[in-house]
Image (cartoon, rainbow, N blue to C red; front, top):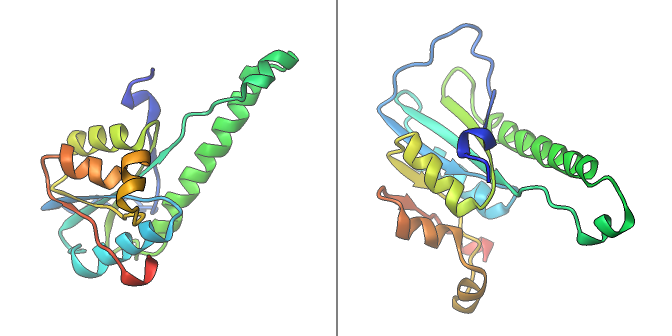
Amino acid sequence: MATISEQEEIVNLHDAHGKVAPAHNRVIAIPVDASKFSEFAFNWAIKNLVRAETDQIVLLNVRPAATVPKFFAATGTDVSTELDRIQSAYKQQSHELLQSYAAKLAPNKYNIRGVALVGDPREQITLKVEEIHADMLVIGSRGLGAFQKVVLGSVSEYLIQHLNIPVIVPRSNELK
């Protein structure tokens, strides 16, 4: 398994035009994906929590590792080529997602950074949050019921239990 540094890409979200990013007081990590729950958490954080002048926002996106169905090996297909194609597509989607979230914010107002990661979201977010010394994390919730949480697990529940920083999980009654 690759280390986090081998799996991570910093995504250029805003062109700084040679400007030095202002000093920040707090680092607020916001994991994002394509769900409405993630978008709600992001919007909630910007509206209710982030101080544009002094906070650094670190957007995190964790994409799955590329895998190829077992039947490919039996057909004699060059699996490495297919893995590269799948991983490239995942990477492009991840970078576009981070850029779309950053585009919602004024480039000269916010200190924002995007990090694309590969692997299990629970592990990768935990490692990255510790590495960047985040002061807090804001994450969406899929609104799983008790049974679904037991069977599927919940990234937000895991992070609440394993991180040593405040984890905020804003919820919307309309998204249930």
